[in-house]
Image 1 (tube, rainbow, N blue to C red):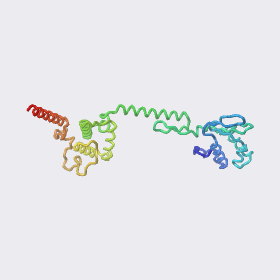
Image 2 (cartoon, helix red, strand yellow):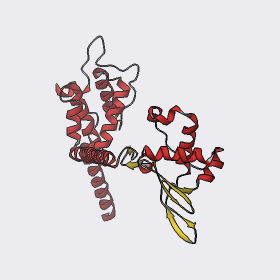
Image 3 (cartoon, helix red, strand yellow):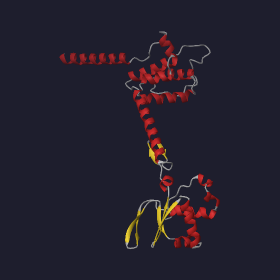
Image 4 (tube, one colour):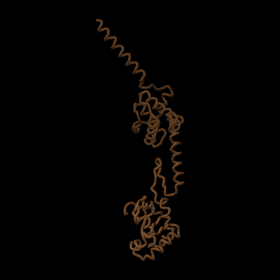
Length: 276
């Protein structure tokens, strides 16, 4: 069995076995020889199950494998058993060695949500971490389910010109029949942060530029565009709207009305032509 790997923890450096490189090598060999899963084997005239973390061998086989005397192997295994590192079951067919705490140190990590929980600590710790991850995920889902466009806007810009600018952007998207979702709005705000380097005045100019162009998202501020940073102050679009100085250059309701009137007039003309 020479595939896969075993886990070796740094704390082994504080163990007595670290002090003897030969014994350390034998100990690691024992761990590597242990079954990684339950297996059946023929023992005498019958089948027996060799459990995970256990393997069947003999002192003679180990002495040959390690190139030492059987007496040395017996003494070493006795030392490990005395220290609670292994248990030995001897019979006329050989010796079954169980590595104690094998599961605690060699279990694979388990995935819980987006967090990796190491089961090699203890089952209790793993269970506690899994419960904490589940609680955090639950709280996150509850928070997200309660979020609205208005609440996100209030958290991002509670008041002021930036609040009004973003409010106008939301309204523009709604009138264009492309309303923002909470997720899309949060992504747009992240983009706004990136484009503006978190400068409030620049954010207002970017949103104002978007409103004037009728864009569906934010883009980098044009080099020749700046209301908030101008030497001779000119109110930006949002401020003009608040002061009654600005009229939209787009009015979707008015456009729809004109379109209906145009269609009605065309129908009247077609009907009049038919009567003639």
